[in-house]
Length: 209
Image: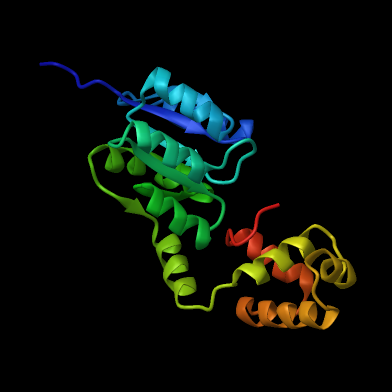
């Protein structure tokens, strides 16, 4: 009787502590082994070519190159790869982008100890795995009004600490137009101040800082 080869996993995340935590979880599993670790999207692509893992665990927000960009690049070279997105929040924009890029699994980082192993095994077996919380978040926000390009730019400048007058000057628009954009942003995001708007937009992947 032959023993099946272990599932080889590549972990991609810019937080060493999280990578160490995943390594500790995998270490005790006879059917799963850690094939490598990367701290950003660029490293992930290079390491994927070397180790050719069965399953990749991919963070979305990283320096150098984002998870979505890395998914696109890896799937371009290896279209049958199996990638599970690890995220701290359900999000909507980034989650949808990752799905379009070809991710086949989504897992909240807070659920790693409970669901990581089952998710890896399920995805390796050819199934898709999207946590119910993430699916609900995507469905919830898909029905909402999304920020348009101008509103995303304005909110990005707010996140950078710019005052209305600075934003108006930088975009060559009036302060009243900036205020109107912010009013629309607050309404769409269901908030009533700039700080909360920025926090929600980053959490949902609408803007990045």
